[in-house]
Amino acid sequence: MARPDINRSGEIEVFVRVVEAGSFSAAARALRMTPSAVSKLIARLEARLGARLISRSTRKLQLTPEGAAFFDSGVRI
Image (cartoon, rainbow, N blue to C red; front, side, top):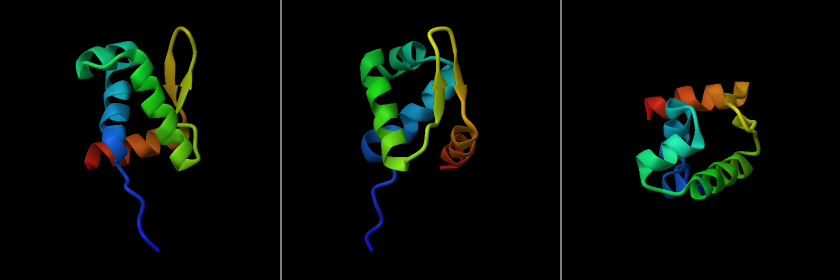
């Protein structure tokens, strides 16, 4: 069975930037992207992995346990 592309379109980099920046907007500015594009990349990554990585609210963003584990592995890559 072929292994799926793990980091399609820089999804891991975007995810790590979002976590480090603490918001989609700050990560978008750092990556020179729109917040909408960052949000869509994260949603696509979550759909591909079949797990919610970030719990979002209007005021804050919080990693889920799965997101924390993925972040730890993403930072090592």
